[in-house]
Image (cartoon, rainbow, N blue to C red; front, side):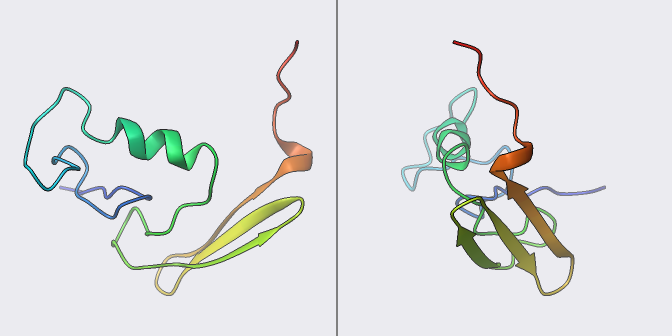
Length: 81
């Protein structure tokens, strides 16, 4: 059984994201909104804090155990207006 963690707050996926313990249908909704604008800070596999580097064209995040993930703005899908 694999447990996933939130890349923004490091909490267990499916667990409440608020200290009050209030359960909602989607407790990490606000975390996903933040991750749409900024890189993850925690490894989703092991919950370790990652080394993050932000550049003008994207970002890289590296876990000491699971390696590097990244995003480049040049390869991102563009929104049609």
